[in-house]
Image (cartoon, rainbow, N blue to C red; front, side, top):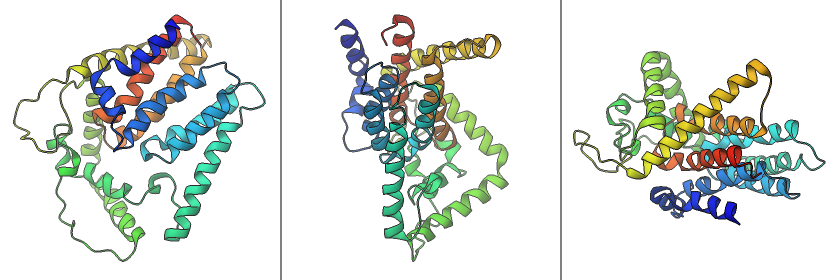
Length: 289
């Protein structure tokens, strides 16, 4: 019971995390709750862990594109690292989610959505990042405030919209490779060290940013978990010794952060991995799995 209370405390103690997880308007509330829950169930020894993991992966795949890589890679990882005759179930959950979304996309748009084209507004969203204004406004302002010269352009088909911005993005990266890498570093810096209010809808970027105190504990614990993971990964490479919790957290943290580093991250996008990091530390050092 004391471990249950401790795990519930992790979800509830941080005001900002709690606000994001109770905001049912955006899909971030699903990710903030289901990603840590998925990590926890993966570390469980319960007999029904695989059906539950399968269901969570199914929901996450259909929720938001920034968990695409996590939901795609994790079922295969579970299948190869775990034991038991039901370890294939997460693969079934993934297969059903991909099939349903692909069939829906094919019927509605005559093209199968997958990967970067999982939703047709993805390329438009990336064009907010691959834009000269990004580095001057991020992370203070939401990228939605960036102006587009072609915002009034008309398209005959939905995929014409996707293809237009996709080609534009590829061209921008080719012409601005150094800037692209600098923006990657800017996003990494935000993820690991920024504790200020971000993603504002309307703010003068010259104003001094206010500290978001909830971010202090989030970032400190997240960095501690990352350092511990890095240290244990070094031990794994040198001595071939590992704990399953380290391998799982490595998959979660890399697959979760990769699309945010390529795209963009705000504090609400990071709630899921922040809570997961706290669960990782508890499982690793209290041995409750």
